[in-house]
Image (cartoon, rainbow, N blue to C red; front, side, top):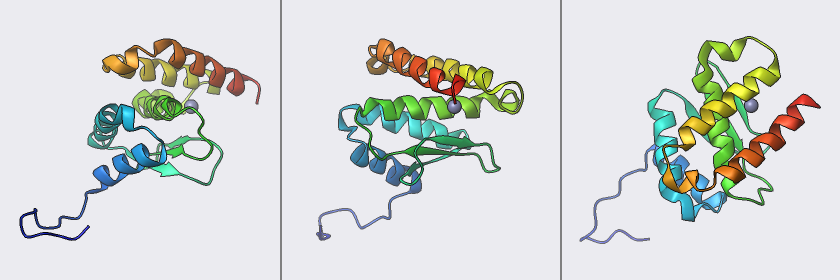
Length: 146
Ligand SMILES: [Zn+2]
């Protein structure tokens, strides 16, 4: 859109806002845009980076430095599952040192526990707790049978 004289001068969007918009648009998450906004700003403010990913077949967390969360955006049939992935990968970040030791299944469980604790801050997401738990169960089964 063209800049009109009555509008604010053009300001380049910051990285967080760009990331949030990309998640909302590519992920069809407009109904949960304020939740996506809060979660992603929180992740950035805690010193972790997050981005949309279109190459791999799964979301991932790399402790870095710098720590980075990549969320797979291709073939997502259930938009809210993108949020469950974000919370889960953020859970790996929150696991800190615990993230580096122990069997994979334990680390995955811990990340899902952190994810659930984070989810509880959002009333709209709390209403979907059963969907969240079913998704976590599903993912945990795939980790135990690689
Ligand atoms: Zn994981």
